[in-house]
Image (tube, rainbow, N blue to C red; front, top):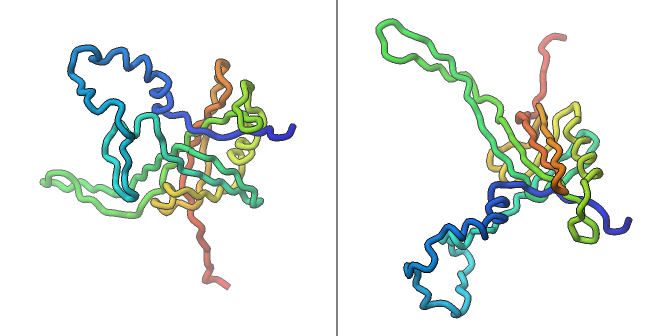
Length: 202
């Protein structure tokens, strides 16, 4: 059907907070006279380009997109508009106990792989409108990448900061949500690097 498809969205605590915002406001101190309404009805305040916005209320209900692109060994690509990604790393350290010494002697061996966790949700869309149906095609498309037997090339602004360009998917989890039209998927992966093995034996 023309205009029919799906999109990947991030399901975050901020999203839930936005949905509950009306309920949370009822617990405030409204009506006790602590607020200054002298500026009510004035013009909207603007900010010059490049000026950091440090007022936390400006960011309520807002989010910044961080596009994540996956590419498999066949060159096929999948773009996730706003995946939520976290990375962690454990260094390889050998510790040795020494008699009469407090603590241990540490010997640095190497940096371990990055552990990469990705959280996405999939929603069906038709002609730019979110549909109230299960996103079958979107889940199938994502599954094709998650079951790849080789490493995936990855690119996002966030992962670029950690110099992560490849990942190997270790596991993924998808729990059916019968009361909604999106499918949330949690992905666990390790970073991978391209390398060449040379032999000195001929």
